[in-house]
Image 1 (cartoon, rainbow, N blue to C red):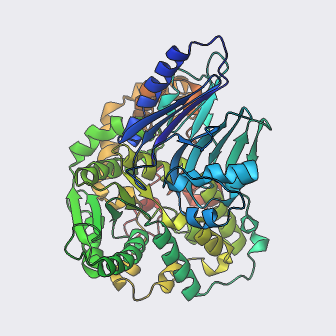
Image 2 (image 1 turned 45 degrees about the vertical axis):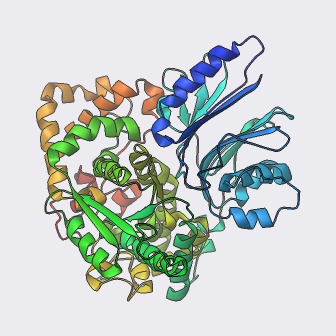
Image 3 (image 1 turned 60 degrees about the vertical axis):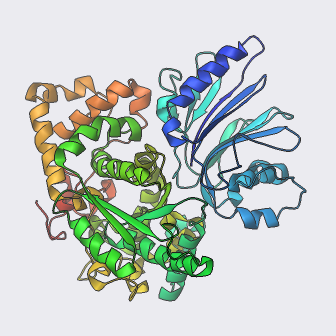
Length: 557
């Protein structure tokens, strides 16, 4: 993964030297995403800057990637997992210039135009410039794993960047570029290219997926996403999702060791990473999982004070004031720094499973399969503003790429086509039982059947309690009483939320920045639908999983 910055609509009267300097300065704000190399493309109408984190073809593959005739320039943040299949299926004779998995985007554009984006299986955000046609494409992956923002500067030029910070002070109308969409300048409008039949419950009714097929599909997803030419590892919290990712990765890593006869090498031996406060539930569970899987495990501890010290930088990097996201991003940010220090550049992570399988504890309250399914679709649509942003930006703050096999598009098609009646929890059935049943024997029972813990809970219950106490002391009653005056857009509902919002405003002033973060009530990552399922949710104010009384074993309400 990397960062991109693009500027389109340059005019003859513009100073090209000054614009190049400006673009480099703005791109530098996100250089943590791509510390390995910088590349620039500029002509009379367009300007692209790329900050590279070299994962595939590290010796080559520099960007922006140019076509052989020099007419196409491409800047990509991401990975294209099916690039080899796409290259083999090309009908045109495109002359590849690099070994990068991303160059297939140029080839698909030559053959299919903007429609080629729908063929990609990967995580990506890109800007492609066609000098001959004076045409550009901007696109983002279907789930929004890779961040992307856009807006117009005061001269009306369109700017696009991987992170919002690159556009602050430049674009008054900056906004999130929506996942699953492509903007084609020749058409002049956003178009949704990712639309699946499974979004409607009727398309899934009575569809069953066997445990064997579900397991095979996920194993294939993990295998696809192990595509790398640099040292990698797995995030292992000891929860179900990260442990399943680690179990699959460990299996394929062992095969690779045997085939390469490099069993004594540091890499490709599989290393796993966890973090938490002293006494963290996750650290203890991760040790159990790692021992069973045979990974080289690294469990790191942080103090509450270290986490609190990091929060301003976490908010600057993750670009949010959402309470749950900041709580969970902080330990992940600290873990990313440790991973970077060990020379690892890519990790596999377990995000997305809870959205697909209804893993959040409030799903126990779903009244029927249709309501359950519709909520999983809504959760997937919103994921780019929550867990995807956390996993991507907290890790990329240190130049570590996080990949998310549960959101692999081929696996998603299989898992989301399943009738939600098979996924439902409650009445003694644990959340994500269908997934657990598919992997019986792959993990110790104490991990396979471990209750759902949100990451911000699992790192140690003292983390959230300490943050609340600190905010209570830091924000006066008088300040909080006037919260809706200072922050009329999405006014904070708690002192902790006020504390985060004030820091966010320092880095990202103005309504346009504030509007990039979703507002509204959130209980255990729930939604208005969940409150409708159980009115008791409306009485709580905390988004911790422990707030789900009667379900979580450590419920505190």
